[in-house]
Image (tube, rainbow, N blue to C red; front, top):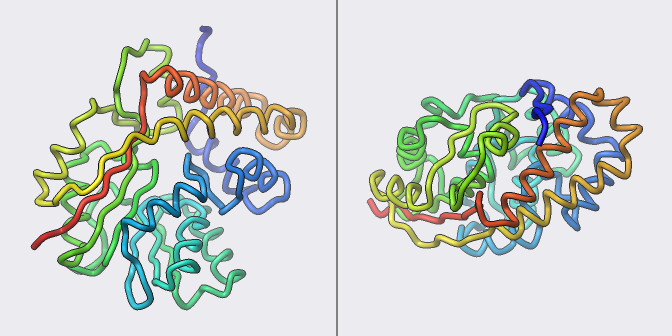
Length: 273
């Protein structure tokens, strides 16, 4: 493998969020995920439906979605369950897009989006939420025990926490694999078993631990192929460097997931007291 075509984090995310509502990027999401629910992770609609069964959301309950990105999955949860949602993300452009989508969907009264750095203390009172989700983003927080402890503080008794960890070490990786797979910001690679230990240390009861790596491998390859078929126009929009960097990222993500060397797990836990 040659030298990774890594790109600055701001370029990686800005290209996606600046063009998120365009028909071109919507077509790519549709081809990659099967159904475009406004996601920018490895999440599919079928997978979200399975996750919802664990969250026990309903009208009158409130969900906090950490690293909500452009808000599509959170808005789908609000529409499906009748709950209220608060989404937070460090990228202001993502939050702006999410707020716009909430208004377009008629969900502005039940969906609020804020620009917040979720790596530190969060601006909410104790026991504010019935459920918290963080899809494919916990790996961007370097102090995982502190982050999960903060989420535990925000949960009501009996509340559910669901997060996916998409870069769990389950096999050998080269330095080149790691460099490409961590080319868009802070990434914390942990061995399988680490998340379970942190969940327990934070006083939460683990309910579910499930390997969902196959979904990530499938989506990564589908996204790479969907983008490759539109390479000329994407290069004009994103620049050659950014386009090549995302394509290499997706290719490596698909390969190491398919080979079982870097895996994705979903965890669901409950606050007992």
